Length: 266
Length: 289
Image (cartoon, rainbow over all chains, first blue to last red; front, side):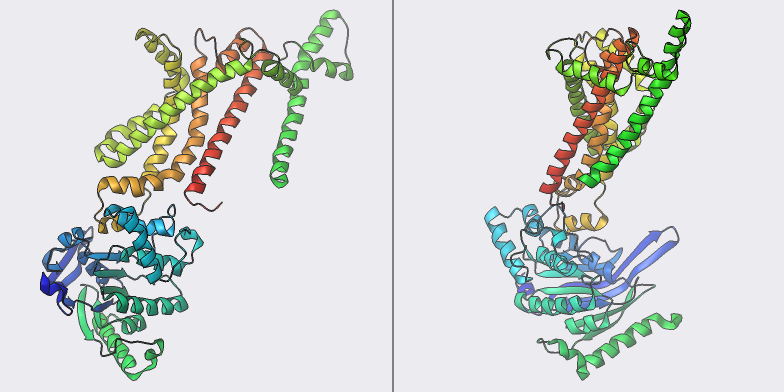
């Protein structure tokens, strides 16, 4: 238990992971022979076209899907156990805030379920609202906030109960470029401030390169990993790092990986 | 407010005009018959006033109905058996009992149908079939059975008939409402390791509220109709349904029409109240006004 708490220790370990869905058209190999180690404090992006299994892999880690083969551990436990121990917070593609609860009420939702006291709920809500720069918006209802603010509120909700893993499934996919840039910066700040391990699914190459310490390139039919890139970029990343030579080189390698995965289909 | 009132008033005006025209046309038969029997003739101008103030018109004109309604509401002590307030209250009481029973029954069935698949397969078809049986045929049977069981009060069978009609919209809407949360919202609660009970109280039930309130407006109207139908059969002495029956049986169209309008006004008031409650609930649940 002790070594899982030190930086650099493996948090998520997948070995020969397989997941096959049985459908009317025969079996679909959503994940095939996936091997991956995510270390504590990593920011891992999963990138690839639709159907490459990037979301499915994240859902397996969250125990929302169950692999049909291979082994997967989260904090050294089975994903189900890890979930029971509140190992992760999950941010979905849509903010999915309850329209009948205020922003503070939405953040309180997991806290209520996990049995935090009223006082502690209030204290945590304040803290995470501050963290996602939504201070003073607690009493507002979701419809009073813009799409970007709603997604920040949903990140606050995932942070509220102090899980050390944050899983984000295309959280900014529905937002425009400008809002997205800002939120990317904020996520990096958040990551630096909290030291969490982050798993981040995305369609966007610049987003993946900008955010990650490790980029996992995946390809479809069957869903598999084609390349894992450890980013040489420094931890401090201003937005204009995207014009640097290293950045462009990594982006190029990601693009190559995506193209290779497509084979002769493109 | 004025933009809203104008179309409604326009339609009302058109209805009143058509109504007067129909009253003249339908009641003229009696006027011409009387004239023929007396061996005289009446001109159109003489006939029209005579259609407006008959004691037993085929179709009473609006002002006669209004006068009778006013007499029934304000012209009697509210405890009088001729008072429409008294009869209206009896019907209102029955409606509320049936409505409450219908809500409890509808919600309980919806919850169990959403929770247990076997309930959906076994109960749902019967709930649908239940609504295809004409309530007019069923009401006397319920009254008779209640009597056989030694329930002397007419309130109980009336409430059952009323609930029989009002539970259905609640049931259908609540099944839909309780199932309205999408896969993502359910997954979110799963990531918190929430129990089934927590999923119900924190997600399914609040998500179903808009559906619930939409169904209440239909259900309260259905409960009123059920109560009136329950007041119609044999030996009815109280309630607007009984007034309508008496009016029709004793050839007093004015009584019947006044009771009919009293029922319509009651229905309108009930729907207004339900609407106001819905507004309050919506505001509490943060829906933009």
